[in-house]
Length: 283
Length: 283
DNA sequence: CGGCGACTTGAATACTATCAACGTCGGTGG
DNA sequence: CCACCGACGTTGATAGTATTCAAGTCGCCG
Image 1 (cartoon, rainbow over the protein chains, first blue to last red):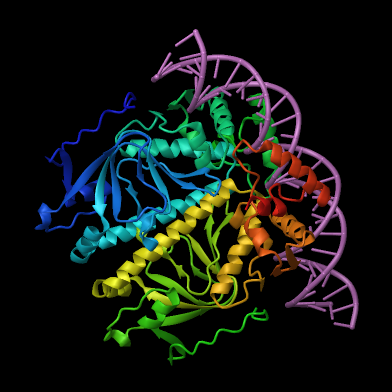
Image 2: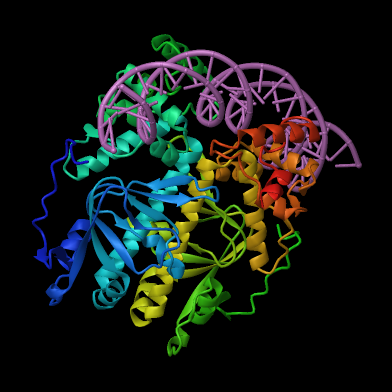
């Protein structure tokens, strides 16, 4: 599972104890990119690491909510299960992401978190966290901020799901993933996917075939390179500006002319209607 | 604007002062359905009401975040604006809903809240709230819970957007709206919509034409009654069980037989593939 | 080697969007 | 008062995108 291009994360932060790894509050805050409480005599408060193997569930739907989880290494997916047993992928958490927030409300998890690779997860017991929050106001502030950010992220997801074409969704998915990898210090241009086409499709509201076709189309257009799960973003700028054809009525002249040019450029109608050249011209 | 079937909300809760209405902490907590802090010598902490006329914005995108808002009466929409100026409706808040959470992160509002009818909104300054939260732990707990609930709501929205057919989306929209009205003490069966077809479509990821057609189809099928914005849910149970035809491969025999029967029943292919009779048969 | 899961690709279908015409309702001003 | 207008809504015809169904390939593991 770790045969990819990512360096194995070194877990030098933390102490070994009883064969497990532990982190203190400062390390946890760093991981979450939130300011750590300044003075802390609580250096002895330690948080346990737990390892999950690929395929294992960190928490399941309906499970009693007792703790939050912070991803220290590895890749996961969070899913909803509908009444027919179909998975709906909600997110692909990775290092630094917080899991389990959905359980705070009514004390039960509403979603399921599954490890896509071997993972190292830090347990942040909610009781402990609450106590710490009463002590350090900054912590609580940070928690509000993280939850608010998560909310905004989901709002953007909603906007993307209901307004973008299949090609635009896949393009954004790839560039977002690249940006997240960059922020973690990995390459934002060349990476490999940890999830199946089916999971990508579920996440984007598409079928796996559509995802596969779109990736192939991007590949033929030279926007990306694809070899199974190995992805190379060859023209990230073009991908980022890829959108559905303008929903605003009023630029019909432009779109007509352009669509001719574009479809002449790339054989079939695989080229997104509001493609590369156009987007550049708009800037 | 208030010529509808809803009784005008009486605002006897709160005090008039300088021509404005004010509410204390206990009233605010009731409105949000969260437990009020038990002992409170802070009875003198009052929160100002502000009235917005239909069409006015409570907050706009990019605006500095200073206060949260609680809907005391009226109906709103929250929207995202994309790079072409198109609106993406995110929610339709009404009495008891909390607005502005998205501004906590990075101190700027990510979305816009617009009044769809005349509204009475309670201001909950974030600074004030933070101070109160430090005093009353239950308050903070409640805030986490509300934000968590909001997160779960958006997750369900994502699942709905990416997995359901147009008919199922509209059906759920109607039943959800009915349930919310019920909880507020209004009729959950007969109500009128406060938003245009375009806004519904934006919310559901559909065009206004599709929304209109679907409502007409439901009407002809006897599931609902429609007269402009006056809606009557005649068969809420059927609406609630309306889904897209099962994405799980494996019940092809059933779906084929049924689709014939159903399409024979209602002229063209307006009948959702997994319709009323089928759903009942499955239970 | 056989089999399975993941992936790709093709062809046909089906659903939804788009474009367009028309109807309704309210408000406004001649 | 009536004509006009604009916003909203309905309905039809058509087009196009994404899904579905169906092979077939590839890589991996027992």
